[in-house]
Image (cartoon, rainbow, N blue to C red):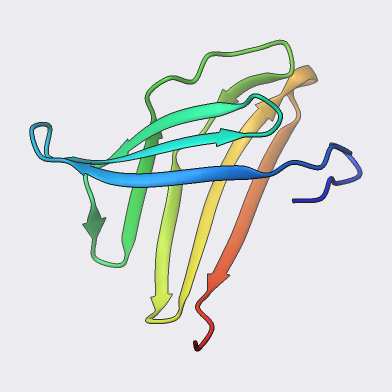
Length: 104
């Protein structure tokens, strides 16, 4: 991932998703090249939506809070995700991403 004007640091990340049969929930483990990490859980799909809640978020001087991440399956080949966070100074940031499957 390349940086943005407000966060000019390139990074790469790994996201692994699995199912916890004992807790009956989906689990997402994320790490990246900047030392960031997250552990999130979801009850699974509800209609076309899947909501992820961070289990380990801790406020820092730069990031005060985060919202849950919502993924919406728009079609068999397209998923859109939404989340947000509050940055230092109280600035609210909304992030939207789109994932489109490409034919093999």
